[in-house]
Image (tube, rainbow, N blue to C red; front, side, top):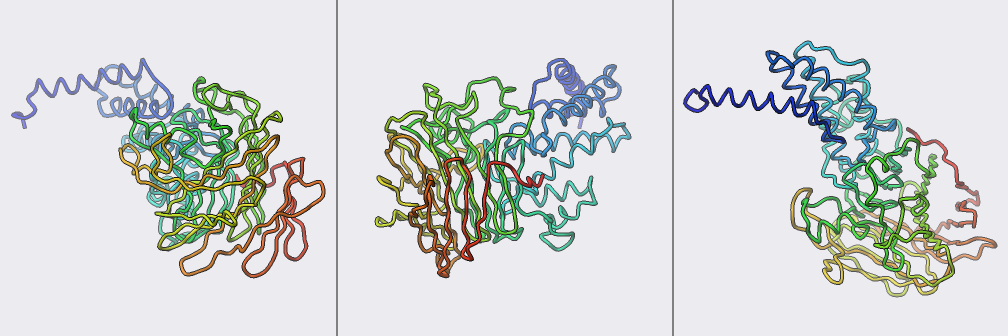
Amino acid sequence: SPDVFPDGVLLAMVDCMRRHAEYLDAHPTGGNWLCMEANGQYHVGVLFPEFANAARWRDNALMRLRREIDAQVYPDGAQIELTPGYHNVSLSNFVGALRLARLNDQPLPEGYQAGLERMYDLNMRAMSPDRDVPPFNDSWRVDVPQTLADGLELFPARKDWEWIATDGQAGAKPSVTSLAFPYAGWAVMRSGWDRDARFLMMDCGPFGYGHQHEDKLSFVLHAHGARLVFDAGSYAYDASDMRRYVLSARGHNVIHVDGMEQNRRGGPRDGYVVKEPVAMVWHTAAGYDYAAGTYGTLPEEAWGRDRKRGIVHTRRVLFVKPDWWIVCDTVDPGDSAERLVESTFHLDAPEAVVDQSSLGITTKRDGPNLAILPLMVPGLRAQIVAGQTEPALQGWLPKAHGRTGADPRPCVYYSVKASGTVHLLYVFAPYAQGKICPVASVRPLNVPDAALAAQITITRGRVFLFSLMPDGTCTLTQPDGKDVRFGAQTEDSRT
């Protein structure tokens, strides 16, 4: 209506768009912002072809978007910020320009569409049983079925995407279950693709180009239709203590040494982008998945405010399919001084309790539950913290990305004071409502020359033996006496 939008207002609006396009053309930024900028610039160039510089805006925008598909997206499909929510922000902007080009019969650079398939595919391959992607870094909920339904418009031959998008009503179930992302450094272990599947995803990767959290070697765990071990995720982008909490290692499932946390922040953003696959170990087979990574070996991987170096944490995770995991942590302090080593695990339950005799932890919730059974070592202690504000925040689950507010959740602290290299082992055993824990006990075992060994008895009476050797190799002896060995080399990363 001319009464609402008189000619002067309309001209000012259109001129504002022209100014936006000129500014974006001259001053590009980086990361997912650059994708949004180029997509907006392209829209102005297509929708207002009357402008003298419209063709230049279109060409430059598409050139940048095509270049960023290669620059921002690793060969394994992960966007360099390693934040699933922002991964899909970049993807939506790449796709937005593509769709507008097709609607207006505009040409696209060679390889433009093909480069997007691996971005869609990441959503499926990293999908948790609740049809989300774990919220590593500053992420939020990703509706994977809807995202893949959108992707099918461009890639209709992907029957595995169709199976996810239709909740199994059409298409074909994905052929691979467990897999690794060699550039993102993510290890995904799953028993299957159903909503009750057992699932663990561990982060062995780089800090990321943006939206980073101090969370290397952290993991999330789902089973029997529930999330049981969580990542703090994101919070409002403010200067609050809670915002600092979710950014810090305290909001994640990692190790602390003498109160010192992981500290990689402060370097140039480009320095957190890798050119080659990261140093991680990955094995997958019909009965087992195994992943291992380290923190403290790279130049940027320091500890505490003083950026102490020389301490190395190695985490090894073994999935004994389909029901339980072994998490084995080694902390090499680089000297013989006595140190306090603390492990934190954040549990998505209203309550958890400690068995004072075994130091086992059990969640108390309606529905599925989780037991954590530690291998007893001299001096090991366990406590549960929930909703703590002093001396530091701990035991909180933020409500949502971009919002304030958080709810208390139990955080397990296992701690030990020891000199020299420290080895800790835990069994994570989820179980469905009305069922009993699948693992009965974890006990020390004497194995000559082993750095650590444990006897794991499951509730059906069968016994597994696990040993860690000084060279970092592991052996799992099955109830039938056969050994499965896990070395220091990747076998079948299933990329």
